[in-house]
Image 1 (cartoon, rainbow, N blue to C red):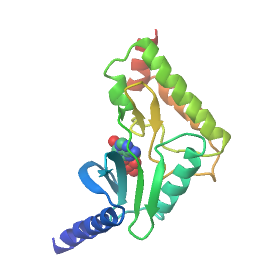
Image 2 (spheres, rainbow, N blue to C red; image 1 turned 90 degrees about the vertical axis):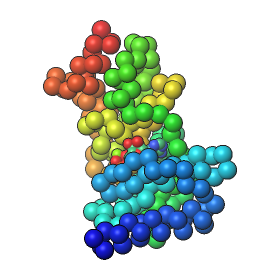
Image 3 (cartoon, protein in one colour; image 1 turned 120 degrees about the horizontal axis):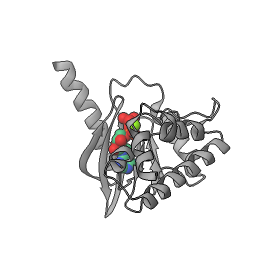
Length: 195
Ligand SMILES: Nc1ncnc2c1ncn2[C@@H]1O[C@H](COP(=O)(O)OP(=O)(O)O)[C@@H](O)[C@H]1O
Ligand SMILES: [Mg+2]
């Protein structure tokens, strides 16, 4: 019990120190993942996201990897913009994307033209990432690493497991995920809307 309290206060104290240093105000926690917690923060009126690595994170160099990969993705206009990162406090600060996960958006039944716009943009981004050899690695699955904005345009997030060292197959993986898996509720729903 004492250990748990210590762990919570430790990652919270890293965040508190970071916020103070960066002139940021904490708004709320948005999500809690396996290795990190995501906080909505604000600098003046600007909304940003602080991804804070947990005390007991199983990842190695998560912050360094996420920041480097995000910077590479940003160089071709992909992903939330990286603002800064702190290796000591293990925090990545990035642009806040106002949007909902691809699967949630899909099951809110967008119109055919909206879905086409989103999917075309998504496949285009995947192709661009392949061209520069940045393999995201987690584009398929539940579609949780794709946020869809009000204008139906997608933003790919979560680059902590991305890599430039393995063959980049984002386009093929995404295509399989969207269209080819007959068991997948996502592929079924897409087919239904596009038909
Ligand atoms: N830049 C961002 N803007 C808005 N929401 C974000 C952003 N980054 C992360 N999130 C939210 O936090 C969740 C977890 O973030 P993610 O980077 O995928 O971490 P994890 O490695 O835990 O999956 C996302 O599914 C999304 O809802
Ligand atoms: Mg994720």
